[in-house]
Length: 76
Image (cartoon, rainbow, N blue to C red):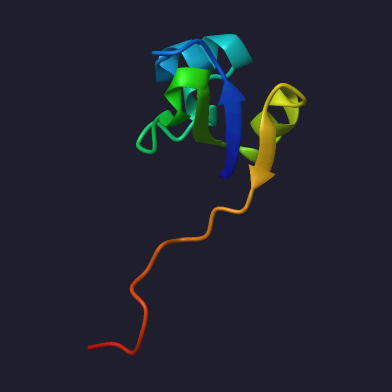
């Protein structure tokens, strides 16, 4: 999965994003969901498959790096 940004109407849902971008449920990380970055401006992030990201462009931004978030430092 890759991370993309999309402009949608304020208050959009994951279902709205899927419909707007023409994405199937298996092309979207539903556990990640639709993350509001700047909801007043309608800017959201979501994780999708690489082929889906290619189809969502150019209205979508990205794909962007999406490294795992892990604890820093030696194991305890």
